[in-house]
Amino acid sequence: GGGMAGGCCLARDAASPQTQVWAIEPEGYDDHRTSLARGERTPLSGTPATTICDALQANAPGHVTFAINSSGLAGAAAVGDADVIEAMRVAFETLKLVLEPSGALGLAALLSGQVPLRDGEGVAVVACGGNVALPDFLGLVQRERTQ
Image (tube, rainbow, N blue to C red):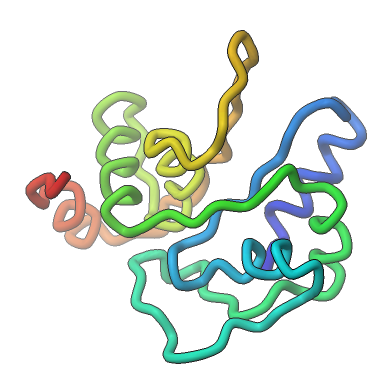
């Protein structure tokens, strides 16, 4: 777990060292957030959570990625399924992008205010992955808004 964030940290180091990188995880699978708070790799415990973000269900950060991310990340945040669905909807309606739930996490964190923004500074969001079947995608984005 944490390969995308680690790769972003390494690219940032080479191109724009002042840029902040945040790890965004599904609620219940926030192994990086938990580990960063404790200062060491910490496996998640308890009953596995349920999330629509099926590509991001690691229960512990990888050894190499945590070494990179523990010094390279500005922070980590967790996002719930309702915010992910809203981000998928916004990406489709506004940006004309079809994102799988895991690929919409960064946008979900931004739209829901999980990542602090600095006035006057730009923001980049990795929006990746369209590995979602059309019926599943439509079933999610056509749900009534609950918030």
